[in-house]
Image 1 (tube, one colour):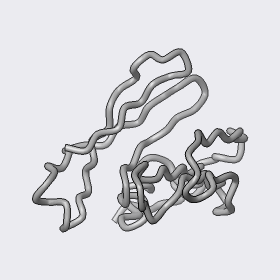
Image 2: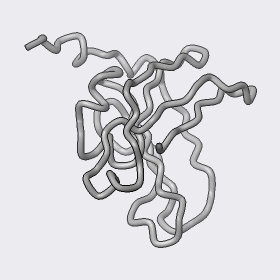
Image 3: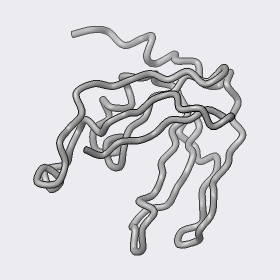
Image 4: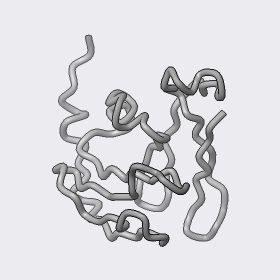
Length: 125
């Protein structure tokens, strides 16, 4: 199972999120998780999607809160085709780690910009 660890600013473990939506090429290596979680760290409410979940399966991002910040974290391995980035709620790039350069990406966000407006307008089917 592919799992992300969520910790707060003091290093305390808040919880874990298992990868729920597997790519067909991963099915021989991983078992999918069964549910999604919402985490609260101070004033920040967040959900976690792992690897390609947030790009190929948009419902994995919509479920937590739309009109939100989106952070993509690279594979952290040699030859990874991606890099880490943070995207604002309006879809514009806030910050990124230069491709191929080791480092820690830190970005200041404006919590008031993550309104949840689009999620609140979603009609159930």
